[in-house]
Length: 184
Image 1 (tube, rainbow, N blue to C red):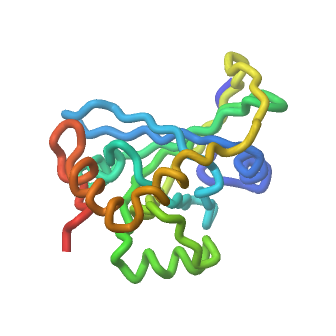
Image 2 (cartoon, helix red, strand yellow; image 1 turned 45 degrees about the horizontal axis):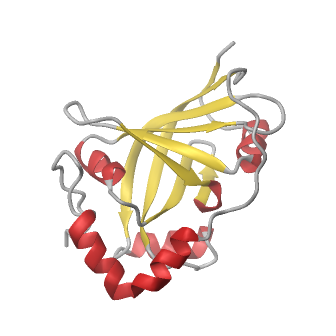
Image 3 (cartoon, one colour; image 1 turned 135 degrees about the vertical axis):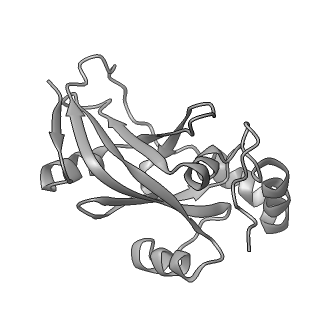
């Protein structure tokens, strides 16, 4: 039932555009595997083999640590509405730091220059394998909307409070790997 492709075509791009959540999976040879849910509002497919997403503050920064140490990254989408399907993008990722000109350019080109409070970095994925599978085991859900919690949390913290939080909670991974958040 699984099918493999070397890039995203219009049909797969349309599938991604209809989803409300995606998951990232990353690890190093010696770390725990990290899987995180993300809102698709922050995701952009910028070429047939490149995806980026605006990474917002979380309780940890495992993906950033794994990208710095290893680079392997998988993004997974699964249909919880409509016809069943799972789609995975397999490749190598890297972190585009907030302080870089590349970050500012990507923000301008793909996010209308808008940076939500608490944005940490942009995650860049170059993928060389796209795989779909049936998704028959994925339950059906109805989308109600995005949670306001992260925006409310960031607003309450303010820019200084967010940076303090990053220094306390996002400088190293749960396995003690540096995230590179404050390099340079």
